[in-house]
Image (cartoon, rainbow, N blue to C red; front, side, top):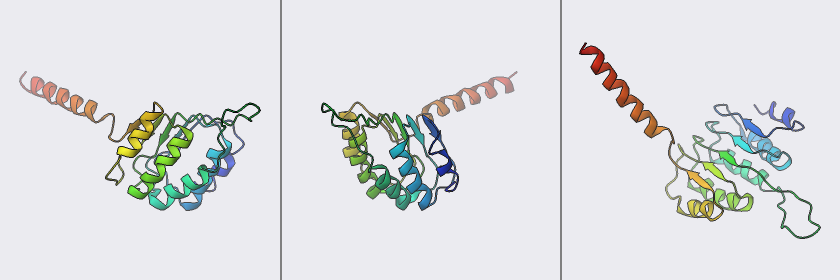
Length: 162
């Protein structure tokens, strides 16, 4: 994946979905560089085994992207990232705390962090809500899956009674 990502740098992508791949440290840094130069609306890097080191490397590189202050004469460098999926990357509390500054700086609208190892998300949740963002800490589809399982069980019960 690390050698593939640089090939995408000059492509006009709005959505990059590389979930369920392996990103080594170099790949995470490259992804951060891509965040700086591309106008990605959705960046889905869940389940890429980034761990703490990879998430930190991504955030460090991606945080170098300038943000416009909205002053007259400013060059517009707005970040339009609506979705950042970091789910199931095995990162811990330390990386989660770095995410607070990142989502505040770039006003990420939806952040998926489910399936990682952290304890406290209140500060991140407050920061997301401050800008109208949504923090997803648990699988959104978990409840739907439970309902589907119940329906399946009921149908099996009905069929076996025939």
